[in-house]
Length: 332
Image (cartoon, rainbow, N blue to C red):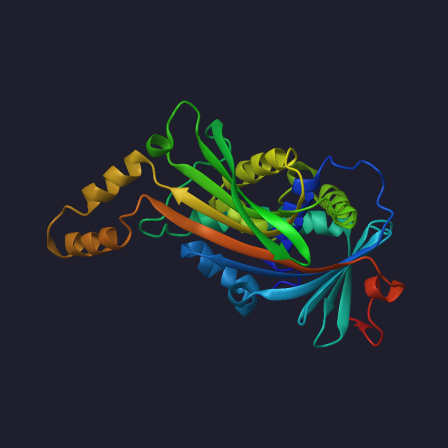
């Protein structure tokens, strides 16, 4: 199954930028901005198997894309695909860069697709066999969550896209209320960020992203996308982790120019005990269980990792930068 949507790394990087700059400027977007970015995402376990159907090599090798914002339009293009969002028209133009064709989808149609994708993913995850050793996550309605948050400035600096940036590492732990992470299991989100100075043009990009995601799915504005449905179904704790991270980012000063986000699932004490018990039996089944347990004996497992970096920032944007390229035809 292939998707014409932007890559996972593009989606999450857009959300990360928007969340980091949310609230810094309430004025309507007026300035133009154009960036070149590189994103890469790696999924593990059963989630990795599912996501390879969506992204193929692009997920493992990374994608370099350009983003251009002018007025109510934003275009995201790479070698294979493109997407033009028009907030005024409430339409999305998806481009096939190889075939030079495009399709048009309204915001209402996208909302419907998102609801269908969430329902489909929830059913597929429920019916799918659980991989041995993979941390289970409680459903969103079963538990109440508590958060632990930590932020540290490492003192490290580097130059990114021509700007001096400092390293800030943020950690969000999501666990069951009243229990420790070891007792209940949960999710650990680590965001290794490089913050440059305040860049006004990047605020315009962030404001556009926030307007778009709120228009498509207000209930999950910070992390919604069709592909997010599978992740949300398998790991419901990821959404509150992302929400909390973006809330905390508001107090940080500077513009995120590069980020590595790592999501980890942590097994509960009961899961570890059950795994130990299942591997203690005799015979062939016991031997196989012990081999699996030995392979997956770590209480913490990586769910996925994202790497994103802004390579260039410019403010010169022409009308053609946010239009369907010349020669492209509407797909029947």
